[in-house]
Length: 359
Image 1 (spheres, rainbow, N blue to C red):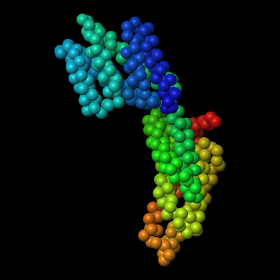
Image 2 (image 1 turned 60 degrees about the vertical axis):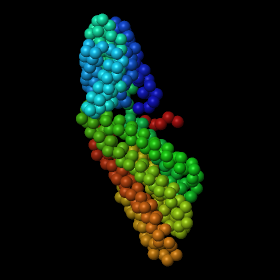
Image 3 (image 1 turned 180 degrees about the vertical axis):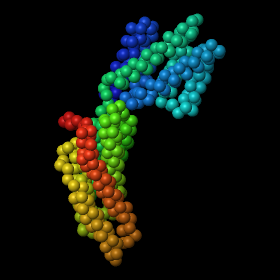
């Protein structure tokens, strides 16, 4: 979820929680606002998964808080012991995500007990639960996530940068310092893309027809990310061996550059095909072109490997570059087949929900 949407959604949840508490006559609506802030989830599916855990965690925290106050009082030492118990229990249950909310529940209840402690604790517990349910309602109603749209554009933007660098490095025109910085940024970008993909994968459509279509797209996006990773691997290894490659025979350099140009163009076409901007062609045409290019690279590699003027020990170090170029092509072939299959079969069900990026 984009940062602005997440902020707005969180603000709405806090606002709803506080207004609901005031309308119901509770004296401290800020506590429900705090609980709403801690309960907002990045996707509808996560809301459904977390609501049960949040309720159970809050009930457990409230029981422990009340029991310890009645037995030992409300000294800071007692509060600290309860907090440690809550954290330990939730870690044991592998429910670490709700620890902050559970701890807040216990502290709020134990913070300032009065003579009518049970009534006070019940009041505070309901305030927390108002916050939890307010966040759940906002998650369901407002700003449904558009992870498919965000995911596609993130992948395209990252690919564009990677492909630009591959073309520059293949021509030995890249500025080394800037390239190294951008490789780190691109690796971070892939990490963010995988986070968004995780949210998209966890989404659910409760109509089977729509859910089957979404699952097909989950597979597609997984391969899109895999292809992007392979492109970054190509960039890294070209950067690493740039000085070595620049000393290769011109014929070998030309073949490598031509094959990389073909693969990067192919990659761009596949992503554009997903949004219907490129006509669908038979994957056999591309398979044949890739096979010819791969054969040229491997044949030349073997020819120069036997050349007495070439240092064999130095030449063999280049083999991982050849292997990675071939793997990149195979990854793109697989992605292309998946995109073609997506549009060829189940056409009435498969719908691409990607909006044009604003200029």
